[in-house]
Every structure is written in structure tokens, then in C-alpha cells.
Image (tube, rainbow, N blue to C red; front, side, top):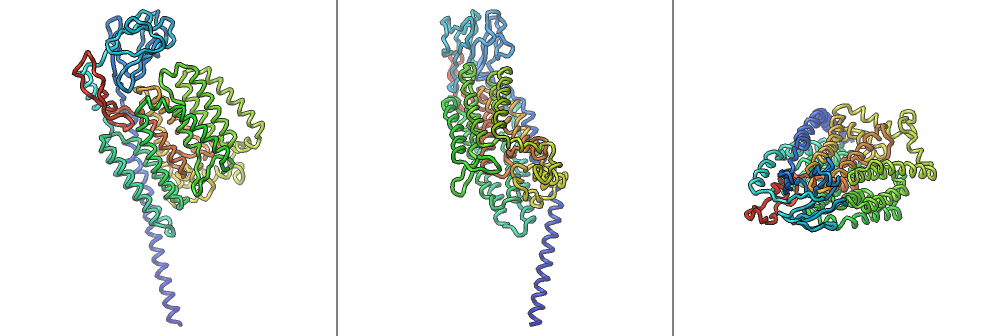
Length: 598
């Protein structure tokens, strides 16, 4: 018996020593990599961010319009406004020309159409009056109140020269350096998460991060196989998605496969939607179907949804639960964007306002006011881009305030949710509980964090979703938290700059609306968690734990990808197409719609 007890004692001592050594190794590893992670994050993001912000966006020239004075104005968009207004694409300073007189619009087949925008003097084509719209071919004389212009093609030698110029000026950075650093970042993250939780399942964590790395490399190699070269957006999205999986592993390891599956679905949606956006005519045909889908998703949730955290915004199908309002964001932007010829029909803007009112009404009935605020801000962006009418927007905002007052009158308990705004520390154990814990956790992380998996904020309700910025700052440090925010802001700045060379107003409006939604949602999440704004219960795009949010974030990114007209940078642009042969230049060579655009 004494021998047995002695043996057991020795075994216990050995196990204790082994566990102690393991804990010591884990502590040393965390101490080193938490300083290494911000450096890797900078190496991953700096090249992509700099490339997106420095893109010159050389305008594409699709045709020329000769003027009575002998000059020629380039048509640098698929949709061009002709008029006396300085804001027109082709400015015609003649007293008989209206401010916005006509529009010249290029189709997918390379053909042109002239539209009369309700001008006072009318539009003619080869001397014949144009009623509404008429096709226009190269060499046609287009008259605007007697001012005659001629539509001319771009000479082949100029096409070739511009193609080389665009290739030289807009060449995206090579993705491989950032991809290698991102792979190293993912490997070290997986090891850190396993070291931080010795009682956890290392196989699960390792499998998920290996799958993420394989999917990422598979996507990049597949795109390179079809000669795509622009990957800055995807690099940023994969970096943020890596943080999302790390957050999920820290807070809810059982949801890791679900989050990975949502990422895969989001990537598939990103590719499918991007390919669908190639065909503008197809896009225009499906807009009203997308409007109906947005209303249906919100309506079904209103009828069959389940409440969480006070909002009726979840649907449950067996073991799966998701937020249809996240997918409705994509449908809403799709339905709200419009091509130029539709922008001058007030009926279309009125119908969009009706769609917005229905969506906001459903969200109000669900008590999901965070999502309602996001929809409303997105509406303001789309409505301004469609009309440019500040007076109308001011009237809409006044109506929204009046509607909010009515809602608070019938649902006064909603006001109590915002009563702690700016007073979180005074109500640290009641209404400000979440914000106070978030700020405390974020402060404890410092610049480099305490290490992934070593935080405690995930124990607070919604710590990995609505309060995830605090969790990022706690476990990863303020530096990576700020880089995550900067990544979203970079996408928005790129969208605004890319829209200057946008082909169609549809792509311009969709990209600006999508980035506005992402930025505003990020602001609500970040500032709400630190009590600078009311805590509205919205997620951090790409980062928060949640399949619906991940899916929607990748879907919204497709609208940005579609507005990237750099040489061979976007799979959302047709890689090659032969332009319609011109009688002026019968030897016209084929070019690339998304590259040389010859």
C-alpha cells in the first residue's frame, strides 16, 4: 500500500510539473506573439490600403462627341449627361441648351442610345426629332436645340495607347506578400488559441484555421488562373474574417464550424453576386424582384421571428438561426440603385421611398432600431445620389423625426434603452453594465492586448457581437482594433474615389450605399460599445461572431468589387469582349471590357 501511494504521488508530481511547464511555455509564447501580431497586421494591410488609396482611376474613354466649335469631348462613362450645367459630363455652353438636356447611354453590346431628359428645345438624331429615346450609331448627328454634335468612335491607336497607360498607372500591388504574412498570422493565431485554452479542443481550432487558409489560397489561385490581379479588398476581408474566427474560438468554440461555414457561404455570395453584376441589363430586370425579397424577408421575420435582446429579428430553422434583416440589406441596396435613365423619372424615386417606409416600418415593429437606423442612413445616401435634392432629404428627415416621436409615444420603454447613453459609469451595475465592462476590458488590453483567448469580456452578454470592439482591444490590443476600423474606412474611401471613373450610376450608387452602410454600422458598434453613441445592438462587419453578419458583409463587398474598373482587377467586370465594328475604323481590334476597355 505505501508503495502504491508513493507511486501515485510521484505521478501527480510529474503531471503537475508537465502542466506547469506547458503553462510556462504558453505564457512565453503569448508574451512574444502579442507584440508580433500588430507588426504582421501592418505588413498585411499597409500594402493593400496604400494600393486602394493611391489608385489614380484613369477615366475610360468609350467614344467622342464632336462639338460645333471643332473640338471633341470624350465620353468617359457608359451614361453621360449632356447639358449647360457645369455638373454635366459634357458641358455645352449654348443659351438654347437646357441645363440637363440629354443623355447618351452605352449598352452592353457597345451600342449607344440618346435620351431626351425633358429639354425645352428637344433632341434630334440625323435631323429627326427624338421622342423619349432613340438608338445612336457612330457618325450620327445629335442635335440639342439646334446645337449639332457628332458621335465618333475612339481610334484604334488611341485605344491601344490608353490601354497601356491604364495598365501602367493602375496596376494593383502583388497579393502574394500580404497573403504569405496573412497565412503566418493565421498559423500563429491558431497556436495562440490552443495555448490559451489547454482544456479545449486543439483539433477543432487547427482544422478550422487550416480550412480558412486553404479556402483563402484556393480563391486567390482560382482568380489568378483567370488572370485577375486586384485582391486588396479580399485581403482586407480575409484578415477581418480571421479576427472573427479568433473571437469565436475565444468566446464560443462550439460555433467555430458554423462561423467558418458562414464565411464560405459569404465568399460564394461575393463571387456569384459579382458575376451577376457584370450584366447591367440583367441587373435592371431583377431590381423589383430584389425589392420584393427585402420586404418578404422582413415580413416573414415579423410574423415568425423570435425575440433576442428585445428585438424580434431572428428566424429559427431546426438547429440553425439567422437574421433575415442582414440579407435584406443586400436586397435593399440592389433595389435602390438605379441607372441614369431611371434617375430622371420621379416615379422611381417615389417607389423607392415607399420601399424604404415599408422596410423601416417592419423594423420598427420588430423593435430593431439599430438596423432601422442603418437602413435610414443608407436611404439618405441613395436618395441624395439619385436626386441631389437637399430640400427633399431635409423633408424626409423631418418626417423620420416625427415618426420616431410617434413610436416613442406608443412604446415609451424604448426610450429607457437610451437613458444610459453618456452615463454608463453612473449606472455601472444596471443600464451601463455592458459598456462599463467593455471599456474596462479594452483599457486592460493596452496597445498589444493580453493575447487571443486570454480575455474575459466574452463572459458579458453580446461580448463577441455587439461589444466585439472591446473584445478586440482586450485580446488583440488597441493597434489591431484601430487597424480593423481603418480597413472598413479604406473600403469607403476607395468606393468614393472609384466612383469618379464609374461606368454606370447603378454601380456608383450601389458602391457608395454599401460602404456607407458598412461604415455607419462600424461606427454604431465601436462608439456604442464605449458609450460615445447609444448601444444599438449591431455587429462589426466581418469581425463579430454571427453567420448572418458574415454573409451580409461579403455580399456588400461585391458592390465595391463591381465598381473597380482597374486593368483586370475585378472578376465583376467582363474579362474580354469584342466591340461593335465601326464603319470609321473597320480594323478595330478586340479589347477587354474590364481591362483595356478598347
